[in-house]
Image 1 (cartoon, rainbow over the protein chains, first blue to last red):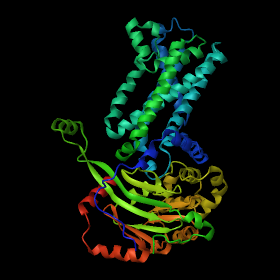
Image 2: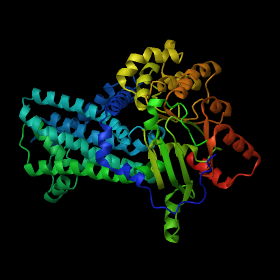
Image 3: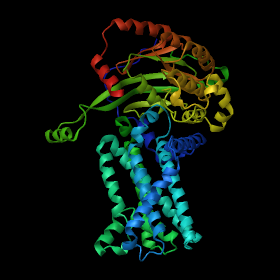
Image 4: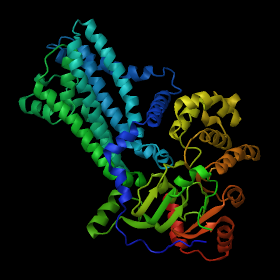
Length: 283
Length: 277
């Protein structure tokens, strides 16, 4: 009979084994295995099926909310801000959809590790898959809203396939921005629950500090610069909106948006790789 | 007997069996636990006084063992002794704090029969969800769905939401789906808690097939007779360290005898149970 050693906490160095948890390429490759692709599909399906479960209007609720907001903002602001805009309802719809997506997805992102703690600790499901599935549920709704916005654009005679295709990288970068910020918030939330309350306040302000119902040209110069360059949502809003309204996009703003999206995702995922174990254990 | 001496290994697998399924050397796992509930006021006070709000808790201290390929091993120990933490380390869910851990085949663990289900979705839909959570391909689950539901005795309830099933029924469904998982190393943590005798007989086929296969199996249960039926080797974990590892009967005898002894560190155990629950 073998008697194994026991006793005091070890004097040996931190395990090399833990390093395998921080190799992003290997982890992303693992995420792409057929088993994990199947898992992702099922997690997204379950997320979509349960999101509006037991509600009378089902998935229509997700579309109804931005349209109610569109009507309200249109009625309140059309005299003040609609003058210089060729299709103000479309202008509003794109702004509302993008800001709503960011706010909702990041709010869910805050609790994703906390809410899925048991799944993460009691199975070998890649943690990235849990986060990605959650994001995909919201992204699917955003894509539906963007499709409706494209239909609006065609109705106004502003639709240009070339412009819309140019905006696709912006949309991908916007999802990346949301994923990166959501990941960071989700990690912080595991250590301090207050972040949920703070983010709930901050996200309410986003509707006002982002040019959703007003244009950048309506703002004084300094405020305009702040809203444009300090608010990470603005470049995406301006770029995607311009594409759907067949207007030119500033290459500087376009590049800045792509940089913001990829940068936020890289930073968010980098921090996630470093902190995920500590975060999940504390969640 | 050396731990896991070739139990259930076919001659063709001998070459592979030469390397162990898992080997741990001085493995340790530390958690940080809060001294008290975290509030802004306590955090501020701790900051001003230079105190820490948390302290270290070594759940596993110095764990060394080797599990041979094909071995059927029972992991026994009291509540809070570090069994689940060790299984999570082996499964790659936790990262070790110190020491070395080598696992040859990616283990497929089943920790909780309730995790991996979406309670609002139907039993039938959950076969796919729970199965993919445990690494089973969708096409296989679709093909086998009818058999899985029949095996779990839930075919008439296929369209009922999982939230309307009893705990035992959920457990039956979980085991019936998990039986489809193909893995060389299977980890089972307390999976027979609420099932009835009828399903246990049915589950016996699953466990018997596991035992007769060349797979490596590591399982925990507080039911010694269940473990005795399927394991020929046991590891006794106590106070975050392996106390005994060897032939099942010998380890179990010592383990059961220990219930008359005072625990190695009862205060630490209570804290571990509290911290992990």
